[in-house]
Structures are given as structure tokens and as C-alpha cells.
Length: 97
Image (tube, rainbow, N blue to C red; front, side, top):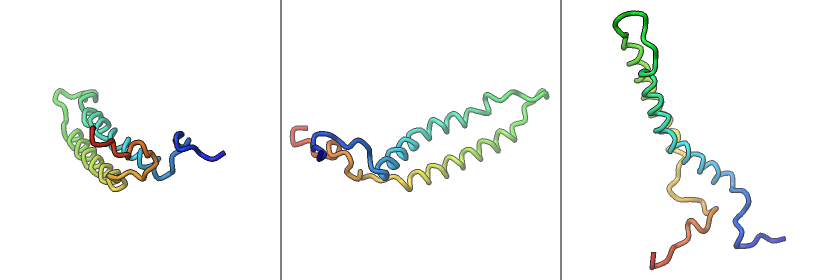
């Protein structure tokens, strides 16, 4: 049975699937980053009267640097143009839209 032009393919090509997962990761990165940046607020205070902020500062710097590195790695794999797996998404909507 030949595939019909009306029915989309059951599975996406591997490259298109990976492209979509990279986009999902790029969308999720700010949420994960916000959670990681707020973690020092949730840490329990030490037994001393004054809180030692040096470990918090180091933690924030390391998280910030890792978020930049992950964003760079994710952005390298992103394309602005789709590969054409979904013809309805890339079709021209027409002059009225």
C-alpha cells in the first residue's frame, strides 16, 4: 500500500526528531536555569549566626557558566529552516492570511 499524500508519515526522520528535541531543550533551559539559580535560597543556613556567602557565590558562578555552555551547545544544533518533514507547517498560507 503506497503512502497517501493526505496521511502524514507515522514516524519523523531521525534528523527532524533530534531537531525538535533540541528546540525542546532550548525552551526548557531558562526554566532549569531559574531553578538552579534559586537553589541557594533553599539551602539550610549553617550553624553559625552569619551565613557564609562564598559557597553560594561560587555555586552561582559555576551554574551561570554551565548554562552558557549548554546554551552554546544547544544553539549549534538548531536550524532556522525545517527539513520538510511536515509539509503543512512549511506551506504558504496564501495571500489572505
